Amino acid sequence: MPQLRLYNTLTRQTEPFAPAAPDGVVRYYACGPTVYYDAHLGNLRTYVFTDVLRRTLQLLGHPVRFVMNITDVGHMTTDQDEGEDKMALAAARERQSPDEIATHYTGLFLQDLDRLNILGADTLCKATDHIPDMLSLIQKLELRGLAYVRPSGVYFDTAAFPGYGKLARLKLDAQEAGARIEPHPDKKNPHDFALWKLAQPNHLMQWDSPWGRGYPGWHIECSAMAMKYLGETFDLHSGGVDHIPIHHENEIAQSEGATGKPFARFWLHAAFLQLDAAKMSKSSGSFLTLTQAMGKGFHPLAYRLFCFSAKYRMPLTFSEQALRAAQKTLQALWNDVRFLPEAALAGEEPFCAGYRQRFLEALADDLNLPKAVAELHGLVSEAHRTKSYRVYTTLLEMDRVLGLDLGKVREQGKDLPESVRELVRTREEARRAKDFARSDALRDEIAKAGYLLEDTPEGMRWRKA
Image (cartoon, rainbow, N blue to C red; front, side, top):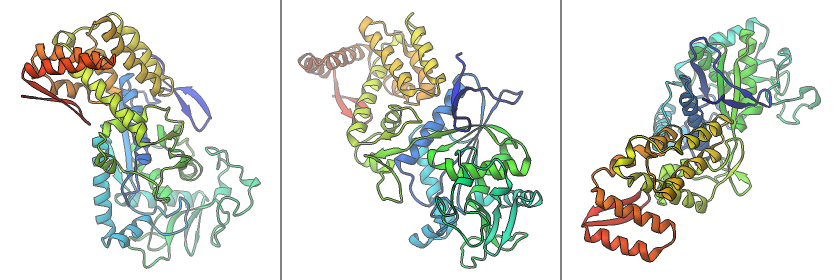
């Protein structure tokens, strides 16, 4: 297997990766959603990336212990400490309790993950289930002189932590108060952030603490849960690029401040999904959900394949035209697999080894999905060109990472007689060559054999005439 190399935001370098623990298990934490609204396609691009990373690790022989959080309290309308709690706003908007809001949108999020073939977390942890862990972590910071109490809350003292700013490369001494973050009367420094929020009696979610009733800051939640399940130092932490300057920077400060140890060894970040030049976001109102895309006739896995058209660290511009092209490509791939001859299901052609090796090398090169997918298409094309079809085993191995249901669609077509399968495969080759007269003639021949063909968002379907 090739050596996996990943771009580490912390060092700004692509580095060889191997798990640190002697048991060889990769300990991986990914920032999950704040469950106050539907996830949009931009959010889901990050989770597709997370899933591909996890699957790649497994394909390359590394077991993974994967933890993701659900934020159901403490995330303000800005990523800093300003505004209102997003969960409280959603509760008022929909006239439900915060718990009902969290349960509803967590269910929709998990449904989206399932539709996209994103593997479930080994541990999916809710912030509100881990308040004691957060309080314990804040007390450690207070004992180390890294936290101070004000009427509005308990804050992390960024000036007392020498490494603050290392992830985002912030130069705090060169920034005037309020240049990036609005000054706050209770903060010593504009970059200080809330560990525990106090003095908000109307807030719908509150817990007792050594400093008074209140609720946790957003950043402390991920630190407490990550270290609870993965230890004080673990291998991988991922999220969107918007997490770098504030959320992940603050996670590092409070975690390493409390333990004196490195927090995550590798930090990986997915770039935005864009509409024209702007990112897709809920705050702007410019977004599309997976359910809405499905309502327009798109298959969820067409969006998964669309995500593979750019490297995860590069912005990806969304359009329905591009998604439609991805769907057409996916349907063609499904048809290729569905109509492979029975003899192609065991063994492999000699040329498969080269495609497999190049596919693995592309993944190992910081998850170069465009190149990896090109190798898959190259394999299928060579099978058609040479009429040598024993490629199914190799395609299934590739699909362990790509997650495009290649094995599933083959199972769906197993009841088709081999004689009709051969006619359909020949018709697909004619369509690929744009020989539409031959394609129409073969459709008629297939109909005479007793089967009608129909193209759908799920690929070609057939039924007995």
